[in-house]
Length: 167
Image (tube, rainbow, N blue to C red):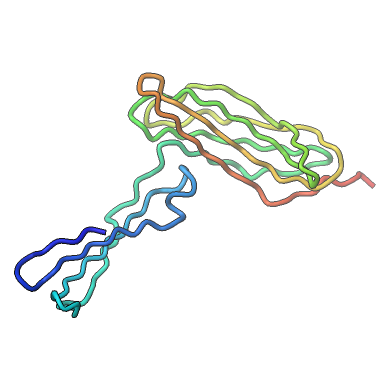
């Protein structure tokens, strides 16, 4: 919160509100809201408080999109694309795992790739034949710009899916 005197008898208060969803994952776009109010020194509102909405949303530096994974027979498969919205080339590592109901993880795909600035990668396929059970698929991407040593992370998670016996 910022607070300062404008002129004798009035106080300016400024609050920056950051929604939780904008700071939970790097894949979410940042949204900032600002509330400005003018109050007298006695605490009475001199003007109604107004909120300003952001003019535009900033895309995340690193993002991933996928065709949701699907089950066919005993195989879970899909593909994803890594998007680089930075001014530098990213060195990215993608890992896709399926986690069953007891917490055991099975790797569906692993890829290391370079994504040029302001572009997206070729589709990265993933697939594996699994034991029968219920699985949640997690896709994680970690990327860095070697020259700046910035590290970015993006993650997706599927709804539970069931691999059933063929009968």
